Length: 160
Image (cartoon, rainbow, N blue to C red):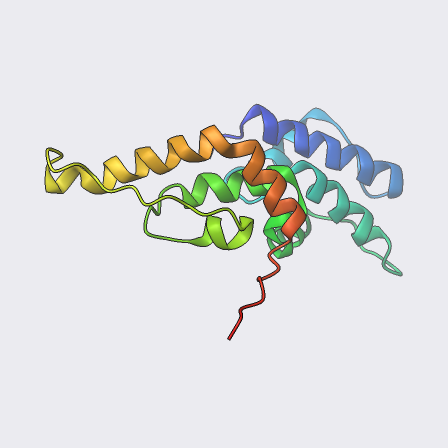
């Protein structure tokens, strides 16, 4: 998979930090950052989590030289609310599931039901609902991101 410019930037940022912490084993140069970017491509890696991965790794006693897989593994373990970038990826993923309620569960914001009008052919109704949900997310993105970051997936108390 070809790395995006954002992934290349993340790889460079991570390598610069790692080199400052481990000068004898990590060298930041274009071929190295390109190789790291290819490892990161298609993986759940976000800027602040990637930086935190390096700092967390080198806080360990006798830390070995960090590898791309260490950063990826750290990022995968982070909760959705670990950063706005992570929340945005979560929203983009769940926009494809119009029957799901994960966005509502994580944000506390009621998610509308998008029923396709009768004139939409049956085989196109799911795509219609995905487009509607995606538009709703885009229209409310900043509010959804803020709510997820603030709520940190605390489930509301239920009155019985």
